[in-house]
Amino acid sequence: MKLITKENNNYVLRLDEDEELIQTLIAFCKKSRIKSGFFSGLGAAKETVISEYSLAKKRYSDKTIKSEMEIAGLIGNIAKMDKKIIIHAHAILSNFNKGVTGGHVKKLVVGATCEIFLKAINKTIKREFSPEIGLNLMK
Image (tube, rainbow, N blue to C red; front, side):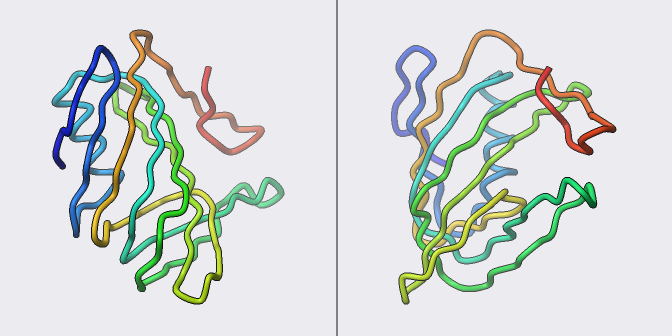
């Protein structure tokens, strides 16, 4: 990951080919002492695991995509749970036939590049497991 520029709590980042989005963002947040924030991005992916959550079953259904996709939209937040950084991200992906898929990002390996705008906030957003919903909710 390359830090392109930083102004106050705003960061412009570039991930390069073969970097995994979630793990790279966690490492950057640890290094930069970012506890919470929000981000958006676009670029290209070459391997992704996208999920959707079933409230009735209280579990995710995964779809693995091992082909090049455009990241038409990426949005997420950064929070803490049990002293660990948690990245919650969703993406819209399109293929060369202009087919679109999207959902919760469990894994995203960058293709050519991924450009991220990250806004860190000075307060800590925490997550806590909700047995009723089955997810780690902001609290």
